[in-house]
Length: 433
Image (cartoon, rainbow, N blue to C red; front, side, top):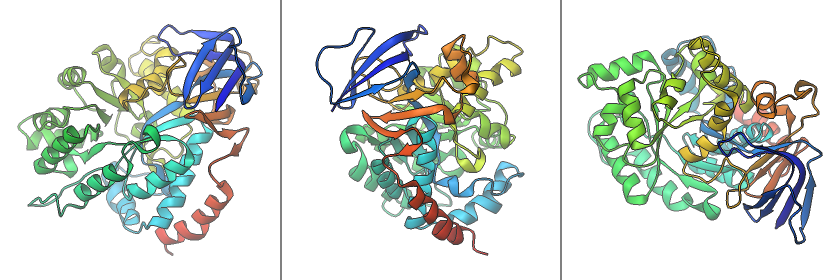
């Protein structure tokens, strides 16, 4: 389908802060075909009048656990390890496919409504998540978060290795790349060297990326150093080839300058999760310093269980302001740099051509209503997007050239059915009285 979006202020994310007024953006299939201030020639099957509002690349939520919407607000007020062991893990043991499907739909809908067009999701029952993503229209890099406890390792018997093979074979490259599969290690502290070696080799053999939780808490970071002769998670996993592919490291709160040098050299992207890290008391990732060291920094929400919502504008605003406060420097992270974390940097982290408005790039676009009270007046479009906008200001979400949400209406998810499934089936299953 050929689509023309007209009468918009287009935030191009071209590295120069360009906002193109009275712009036209043409979409052919799932790609952007034209960007300019003159109406392109030819006819279009669909035309969308932007009414002077702001068009920008869709957000990339580069670290999420989508189905954990079921645990919104559950177990609040505990440190990470107590929260996981006493609250989250017992609930996760009760998942079945039906509950996973409706809770994944709920999480996807929440992200769609706040402008997310692409996610990187790490969670269990990943095949079910993939099915729901495929229907939703979003782009996704999916992984299962491999773990290994105890002695002995047989990849043919390890459930995560079996799941990795099956997921890759069934879903990698689905629908022209809508779904990509990444290899994954949940974290250094939940696995051992045999799994690291196997996942690294599997990723290399199949051309997959890698997704790992890294140095989220001080205790995790220091315990790793104690186990491995002073080596940090980044450093010990590097010795086993884990980073010898496109890779994302979620959190990175306690990483060091020595880690950043490895990350910059290997092209490992840091996925900053500011709200989750603050809520759980994990700390503040030094992303301004990491960016100066050459590390690509993208943005994630983490799970709703540790964030409580996936309105991506909230994470964007905090990411922009947090470094300024911690560093006592109002210039530590400027609005354009924060918006890059949420868009083009996320696309780079996931190995996708998304996050810019330019010919040949993926047609992942969102329209933001700048007539809203919280966006009036507007002296600077990018500043308003970063500091003042909310998810409720998103008027349209287009993923892969398909409008999947517009003016409060979902076109790929039956949201009323989903909410009924969550209340009538998933919650009684996961939280039995």
